[in-house]
Image 1 (cartoon, rainbow, N blue to C red):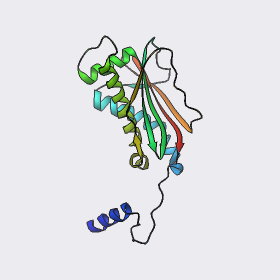
Image 2: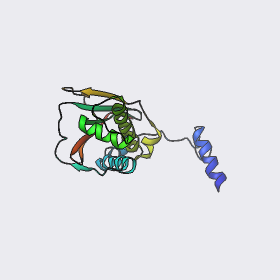
Image 3: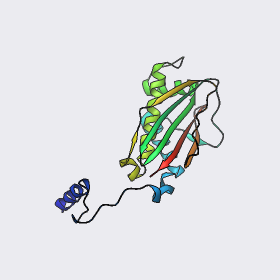
Image 4: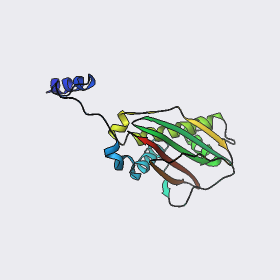
Length: 185
């Protein structure tokens, strides 16, 4: 039996079907767009990353994330069957608190360690989210995180196919996570 599974895997990798003559189907996310855009996957990803990786219990919050004068935004791009991005945005207080949970250090300013930590949080969220859909997990890569800090800036995506945007709260701090899809194959 294991030889059959092994042979099927080898046949698929070489572009043949299970019966050698059977062509393999092209992988597409179009048929499973409801699964890809399911908001529960984003909530589960946030819970997974924050609870399991940081020990932080956070909850989805219906009100928008609290605006602070300074904010920290990380962006991780998706490429492959889905093109788009995962965007994590927090006020500087929240970013420093999250970095403190990650490193065990206290921060009084948004330094390179805080920026790296927020970039890594966004990377983990993007990976957890795409891992909820098998075809997406196997056929979509992630970019290196980009981190933007400051005030009075907006990220704009022109005409996305779909967008998930949720605010979350932990302790007295908030953050937002957005999944933007600008193309599905």
